[in-house]
Image 1: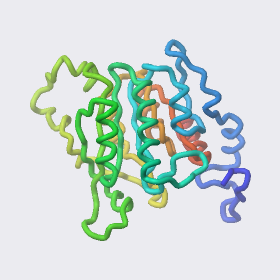
Image 2 (image 1 turned 90 degrees about the vertical axis):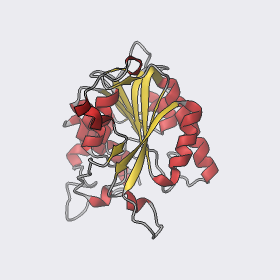
Image 3 (image 1 turned 120 degrees about the vertical axis):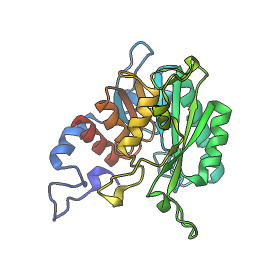
Image 4 (image 1 turned 30 degrees about the vertical axis):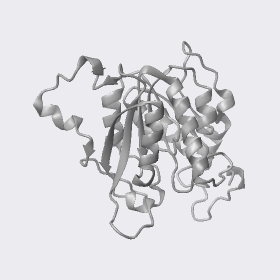
Length: 273
């Protein structure tokens, strides 16, 4: 539903969209950018968030210009374009293959991608990533909301996967080149575990948990695979979790989302960070 079609609630007349006042709409709607507004070269990069399908957005970014990609592709409804059309599993596979190829193109030689997913499609993403990147490891994380990803009424799911892959062998990890080896002391070994059962979500509005990422999770990825002033891309930005933390940590952020409401909320959150 377009914002222009929304009717302000009588209970909250200043919030036609939850989390956005009329003043917010007047401030952010006029400056919404789309993929057509992306004009960049490797020597002239700019931060920004865009109302754009991830494929259209990634295609406008220069080759070998991005340091880190943090992505959580939509899964449950297989919504893959701005028309919110439902697709077959084959369509879903091909679409993911296409955007991952664009992701590989825009990453620097030292760049990395972290792909967050549920267990149902984890094998598919492993296969896709293996054909395009070098898969370094699968991270298993505690996720108390993962049970909502499946209607199977057997074991109560409390985990999700994160695939960590790189463009090449010269990737950066833990503030140094991976080729230089790990010189951390034994007391820091826990940091390198691919079992992340020490990170918990703290989400106040459980009605809007889809795509929400704990701050500690984003911080851990940024610490491991980026420096200050590096460019970080989130192709499925939702409400801007990655962008907010990236800004706080001194990274440069580019994000895409096809939902205008989410985009406006992300604009507000990042602007007020």
